Structure formats: C-alpha cells, structure tokens
Length: 100
Image (cartoon, rainbow, N blue to C red; front, side):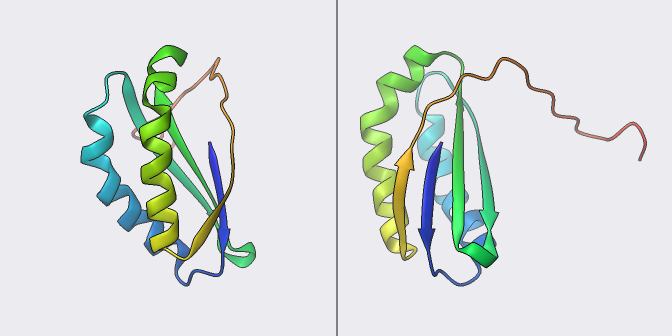
C-alpha cells in the first residue's frame, strides 16, 4: 500500500485517472489481481492498494511499480509518503448486496 499526500484538487478524479492510466500496465504483470484507491480529500491523502496472488509476484514487480507510482504521484502534485506490504488473510467483495 502506497500512501500519498498533497494538495491536489479533485483527489477522487485524479485517482480515477491514475487507475485508468495504470490499469493496462499493471495487468501485464504476472500475479496482479486488482487495484483499490482510497482518498481522504479533506486531508489531501490517498492510499493505493495493489492486490497480488502471492508475495513473490508482488516482490518481482515492486521495483518497476515504484518508478511508475512515483511518476504518477509527481504528475498529480502528490508526494509518496510511504510504501507498506500487507498480507490479506480474508477478503470478501460483493458485486451486488443481498439487501439491495
């Protein structure tokens, strides 16, 4: 998970553009499973989570992803504050909520 900060306007809009920019590129990596971007507009912060099949796949892609992440952050007027790696022992995503 990368944490980025800055005074970018329309952080959610920038996040969508960054996702579209990086999506095809990330799909070229073996083991890539998805991308989640969290934004905190009032505090000028975004967290970008990439999902990988295994820690080994993530590690193989880390260096080149870091270069792309830094370029995207710079273009958006953001600063990369940190990068952390987490395991995901549980995940559930519902396409349609059973309660509507």
